[in-house]
Image (cartoon, rainbow, N blue to C red; front, side):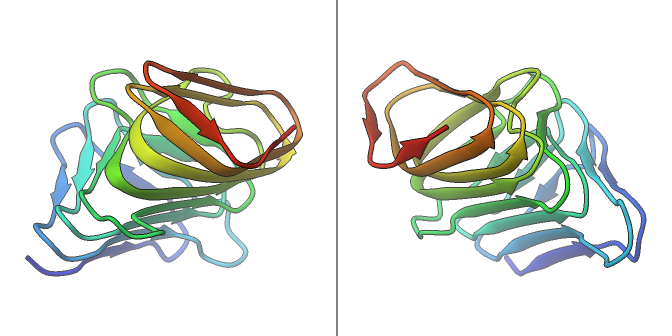
Length: 171
């Protein structure tokens, strides 16, 4: 029911396959963003963070490896993922990486999003910035709206089973 916060004082945050984090309506925050560190968030294949109707915020100084993030939140920040000096990595294919059918997913990265293995999504709207080098590869299970998707130096590949509506996409 309540808010869940997991914070690191400088080390990685590891979520094992059986270490699911769940809330029915509260926000879930995973914070490995500690100044002066290179902390990662590493979700094993099969690990799930489910916020119910609450928002999810995942932050790391370096890379974020995704198992599965899920929310029914319908806001402009249903899921926020920030890899300050790294990328967003697919941790495996047991679960869909990001589920937010009603809201917007905001991703900020530096070294790519799904650069080596695509990020599987089932989301309504995507706002993504990759400010460094690295590719963006998204595999959407239905329709998706791309409101602002940018990479400074890399390719953008979005595959969808349904319609893709692109408002602002720059590579």
